[in-house]
Length: 429
Image (tube, rainbow, N blue to C red; front, side):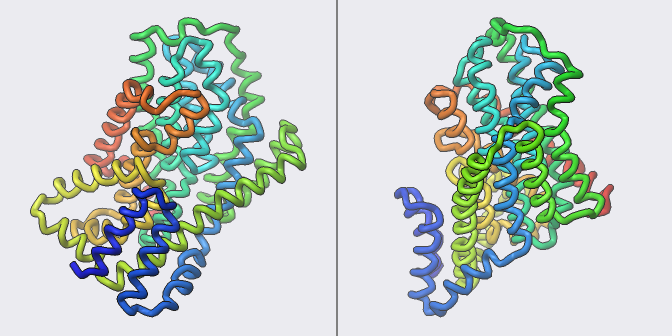
């Protein structure tokens, strides 16, 4: 490898582990390498602009706003009441409720941390009163929240489709449904077993909510993913337009139906969505400069050839990639991982003839596991903060969630049809 290639690949990780923000690390390393290699300093502003001047990326800030609106509108609380009415509270019932609500909310927000924050805020106190340790609640909600990047709409899938044009957003959204459901169901197994083994939930109090009344109250929230996904399937609107529809639908529910959002609250939502979106889009822009520098230098091709040259075979390479991605997911968000690593991963996938839609689902499942894998896990950090516990205290519980979702991921790897059947049936594959 050349000097510039070494600096590009290892300089970024050195800066990141030194505590430099991801966007700054990407920009600094890429700019330094471009200047040193004489690639043309104007590539920096050009790459920054072209990195975000893509129509599908418009969906990201709008889905972020939609997720915040539904989080603050009271939809999560009503979904919890409905799920409790259907499942009950004893024998791990509230744990199952948390998973179900996370899965439905994931069909609205597309963001794991936002999903985990909304459900943890609503459920942690009630689960503690019912006898669930706060560390256990934080673990299961963090794990369940990770299904948000699998169940459409998914911000991670949108970014993947931009970087891998052969995998369209509709195909990825369809492919993520069954793996997302499988991931959620897999989490219920350790939750129920652990809860019944330790007697969690035996202190649950209060009358079980009535199903019909709870269903009517939560129906507005349940309609959101139906409108979003149904509109895209029928061709009424594109994924980007679906995000706009979700925003206005959420506002209508929060302002006129539940009346939980006023003008001051709406202003705060817009400010928060703008701040989060700015961070995400800045990472996208500077990662594009980083990717351009790596591609021009041939750094990513060299790294891919190095891995392929180890002689591990198809399944050996797959195992190495899965391990690397889970570790990466512990430290980085899904958008950053895709932007940084896909230039290396795509040539490997193409060398083995892997289906790029299926490959995108597998990568996303890995990232989902990393979101709740200590010591640095974005979902777990959010839920631990809400629950008032340390990440270390969740390790005895979260390890079972990791094993459960890893088992679900293994099934999708061995049986690609779990991911590919629906997009093929709908004519996307």
